[in-house]
Length: 270
Ligand code: HPA
Image (cartoon, rainbow, N blue to C red; front, side):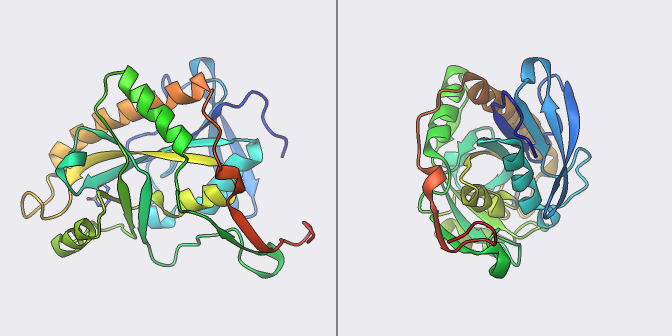
């Protein structure tokens, strides 16, 4: 596939994000080795920005069924270099209380059996990717600056625990995650972040705490209150993602040089 001219980057929208800004866009279906992906190429004020609603525009795909490999491959095949994601999460401590935006800088992976790599051996090669610093520090700094300019409450640096879902956690699981040093818990950050890194893309995620982790405040999650945090948080998160992609000028980083290839994919030679 030919790279798109004038691309600024992509926004992967999580729960609550089903369109960009004014919603003006062209739909594009991209075929990949992992399946087809429907993307939206922004027009007007969002020109140059690709939008990918992670759960589909009608939220019909649950976290464990998202085709993460196809999504990332489709973005890369268009020539996207910068990917900003939003992710609804549960808060595990006061520092990341609902109502703030959280720019995550580490993850703990508790998913089960999701395909995590493009390098499956044989013809697709073998490689290991460095995720010491799993999110692009330059994009994260740009997002923090954008939030600051807009006067938004934003926490820079937090550990994201990714569970398999689709169920929420038990109170005991939340206590464990907090004791392990996780700040927020969600269901979609993995394998999105490491797959982006395998492709050498710059990837950052804006987490939106929409509830307290199970058992932290009451014996049940307060889901009606959560809808308000999600709505307000997603609006703010999309705004800073658009600001960063439109402004460009993000500092150089090492995201493109993190892959240790032991056996190249067929056709790429040794
Ligand atoms: N746990 C896991 N994923 C989530 C939560 C949660 O409490 N809230 C939003 N996504």
